[in-house]
Image (cartoon, rainbow, N blue to C red; front, side, top):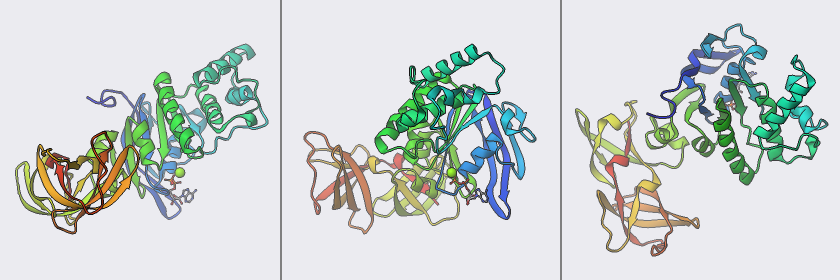
Length: 366
Ligand SMILES: Nc1ncnc2c1ncn2[C@@H]1O[C@H](COP(=O)(O)OP(=O)(O)O)[C@@H](O)[C@H]1O
Ligand SMILES: [Mg+2]
């Protein structure tokens, strides 16, 4: 059982639609987000991620459907009384205030005593690794530290759900990767539901318990990262997440749980029909991830299937080499990735090679 399966539901969407005038921004959103889950909304710019996040927060009304949070229908529940809190794309911290004033800002209407508020601020700062930074001026902080101030300010209100709209997109690559790990740790520590909006598939894979992949106002697939990567339910999802080779194929027969196909360059393959996504009436192609194809070096044999090829392109990445290879004397070219380990030389363009692959790694789209 996966982490998410046995958790109680925190948020439920039932056929949620959102129109901006004539524009249909959310087109029937269904699904659940579990308590304590790190959940991501992933999709290209303009697909409706921010809109969906804002409907959870109550900043945006929905046109029809139901959003339940913690068992309550959110229709007619104002944003400021929902058990949610949002960390914005631009951190929106006040540069002319100190760190502790920024973090305590959310408590300004709270009836607690000054001492209790100061204690809550100190706790929130410690939680995000900014203990002792309270008196600093916010404008003097680095990008990563500002991010943490924004998080502390959201967490101090003890929401059940923290909403994060592309919180890391303004950071450079190194800082972003660092903050990704920090955010995962923070989420585990505080244990509340995090919902992250991102257009970066790698970020979503790294951080999430589960991901909803969105296109054009719809959820195309909602699954854990490994399922999304290994068993995408459509060509579009497969193409959006990581690199996928698509090879034209023909379905020869379908009997019970077995599909007999002919994939160009690979030959006849028998695959498990129950592992194939539902048919959509498209011309069939098979998908194969680069790391599921392996070059065979002298003396090595394939454990399952083997196909000849010719190297057309070599892309060296230090730890990895990517090879574009024509398969089996055809014009079908696939990209495969090999880890560069001792005793495994980088091969040249034009080299004749043998490629090992496994039918169970194939995904059939049709
Ligand atoms: N307030 C608004 N009025 C009209 N159209 C909007 C408004 N907000 C968003 N949209 C449109 O809705 C679509 C989804 O936007 P958004 O949710 O911001 O996408 P994402 O966050 O995935 O990039 C886009 O086409 C956008 O132009
Ligand atoms: Mg957005």
